[in-house]
Structure formats: C-alpha cells, structure tokens
Length: 289
Image (cartoon, rainbow, N blue to C red; front, side, top):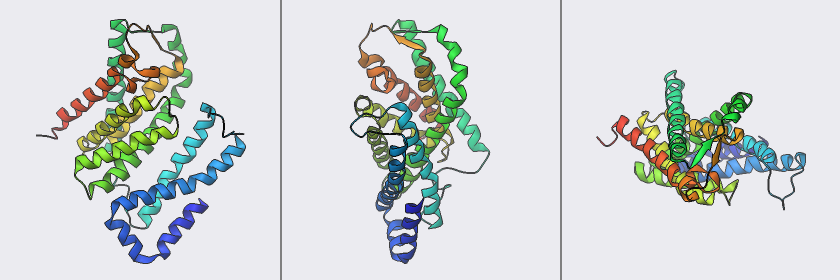
C-alpha cells in the first residue's frame, strides 16, 4: 500500500503530460500497471517470505503459494481503483458493471464451465481412459465452500486483469482479435511464474482458453459476467477433482490425449473442451453473423 501510494502520488504530481501520454498510449499504460503491481507486491513477498520461512533455493509448497497468490491478487482492485481515480480508466470500461445482470451471466458462465468439463470426463470414463473414485465423492462437501470462494476469487481477478484491463487497453490501438491474441499470450506466459515444469505443456491450452474467454466477454456485450463465471467454473471443477482425488487414469492412451501431468489443458481432450466451448459462445452470440 505504501509503495502504491507513492506511485499514484508520483503520477498525480507529474501533472497532465504524463497522464495524457498514458491515456494516448495504452501499451505503456499496461506496462505501468505491471510495474506498479509488482512494485507494490515485492514488499509483501519479503514479509511473507520471512513469515513462511521460505527458502529461495527450494520449491514453493502449495501452502506457501496461496498467501503469495492472495496478496498479489488483492492488489489488483486497489491499483485499478487508483487508475480510475487518475482518470486512466474505470471498472465499467473493463466490463465489471454494478448491475444485477452480471450475476445471471456469472451463473450462466459457471454452469457452462462445469458442464463442459463434466462432458469431457464422462466421455473419458466411457472410453475406459479413466474411472471415477466413487468412494471419494463424500470428500467434496468438506472443501466445497473453500474451493468455490477460491475459484470465484481467482477467476474474477484474472478476468478483470486480462479480459478486462489489458484487453480493453489494447483494443484502443489494435483490432479486437489482435488485442485478444496479445492479451491471451500474456495470460498464458504469466502462468509460468508459479510453476514452470507443469505449465509449459499447458501454454497452448492456456492461450486458447484466453481467446475463448475473450469470446465470452464479447458474447456478454463486453461485460465480464460470462467470462468470470466460465473461468471460475473451470477452476472449480478441476480443483474439486484434484482435491478429492475423484479421477484415476488407466493409462490406456497417451498423456497427450488425457493431459500431461494430469492437466486437461495439456492434452487433446482439454483442448477440445475449450474449443467446443468457444464454438458454443460463437453460435449463441452470433459474433460473425
């Protein structure tokens, strides 16, 4: 917070020329956003590293990653509020509108995300590529609330950043699809920050996911409701499956089909799931009509 206040004060004291420059050059505004974001986060990382006894030469454990992720993501609304205060954009511009309709869109997207993955895993079970651990179903209720809150939080913040702020800014200088390609590429590559080995095979799938989430925003009249719900639905479904250990693979087919390291986006079936969802969004919205 201290560093964010300094950054905002600097922008304000730099008077209109700098602010006008950032308004007229959205690419530099996006760069400024990341500089402020990381600059505000690093002091929190230092505090958390001491608190969590984080040893740099060792890989982060899940219980160490969560506080880092939460601290990073909680800064986003504050920074974008600062940008709004400086008249560099607003939450409605990014698709986050204060209307009841956004909750209906959120539920629609969430349902579509969960349904699409349910179809994928049902197909794999029927093909004998994996099976459901029925005895583990009883584990779901104990973690349902936590996973739901995490999914909504992660989905909401990532959509606000990538399909909201970044896509909106890039769209001012580039075509919709070039802005979508660039913002989706940034979205995919930045996932490497948390995990490199398991994320590398997922990069094409993450990029495609970003493109489909852009479609979701366009289908929702440039609001983030459907995109937020769709993203949260996918996160919720995968996290629930992983946490409860619901799926066991039989290894009858290559991991390239079901997903390398048991990550759907690193496999053909996951890519087909995301692609089919994009097809549904195109058909429903009639974007190309």
